[in-house]
Amino acid sequence: MDALNFPLILFLLTLATGVVWALDFFYLRKKRDPKTPTPAWIDYTASFFPVLLVVFVLRSFVAEPFKIPSSSMRPTLVVGDFLLVNKFSYGIRLPIIEKKIIPVGSPQRGDVVVFRYPLDTSQDYIKRVIGVAGDIVEYRDKKLTVNGQSLPQQGDGDYSYLSEDLRFEALNRFIETAPSSDGARKHAIAVDPQKPTLYLERVRLYPNRSACQYFENGFRCTVPQGYYWMMGDNRDNSDDSRYWGFVPDENLRGKAFFIWFNWEDISSFAFNRVGHGIK
Image (tube, rainbow, N blue to C red; front, side, top):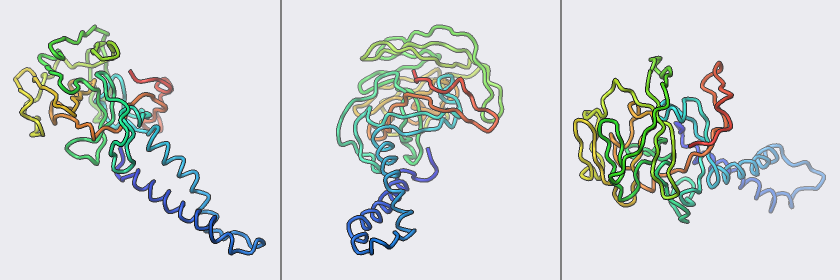
C-alpha cells in the first residue's frame, strides 16, 4: 500500500505528540504562571495529538484507505480507485504487528480482501476469495470449480481498457456466481480468450505447494486450514494464488467494501466510480 510503513509512522507521531500533551496537561501547565502564554512548540505539538489519535484509532480498528495500483481486479476495481477497507470484518488486530486478539468473522467466498503479500509482507495485495479452508479449487480451460461445483459464468458483453503500459486490452466480460455460506454471490470477471489458462513457468515454490497439482490447462488445489485461495477478477492479467500460493489468516488486512474516490492522474477524475459498494 505504501512504500513507507505508514501505520508505524502514524503510531510514533501519535505517541510523540501525546507525550507532549500529557506532560503539559499534568505537569508543565501547573508550573507556569497563568499569565504566561503556552510556549509555541508545546501548543503546536499538543494540538496535533487529538487529531492524530482519532486518525490512528479509526485507521487501525475501523476502516483503512487503500488505492488500487494495477488492473488485476478489473472490471470490479480499476487503477486509481480509492477504497475503504473494513478492519474488523475478520477480527480485531493489534496495530503495527497485525496480531488478531478478538475473533469476529472470517472471509467468505466472493469477498474482496486486502492482505499482506505472502512472498513479501511489506506489500499489500487485493484479490477475491475463491477458496476457504478445506475447499478443493480447480481451474481448467478458464472454468472454475469449487468442491466439484462449477461457478456459472453468464456472458456480459465485451470489456476493454488501456493498461498501465499503454496496451489496449480487449476482453470478454462475464458475471460469475460464487457459492458462499451467506448465499450465492455474483461478481464481474474479465477473460482474455487469446491468453492461456496458466503460465506454468511463473509458478513459484511456496508453502503447502504439495497441496496443488498443476497441468498444462490449469490446476487443482486443496486449501489448508488457516489459509485462503485468492484470484483476481481480471483472470488472465493477475498475479495471484495460482502463482504464489495460499494466503495465511495472519496476513489479512480487511474486507474492501466501498469506493470513495477515484483519481488516477490530474486529467482523469472519474465521478461515476465514486460512492459505490464493492461486490
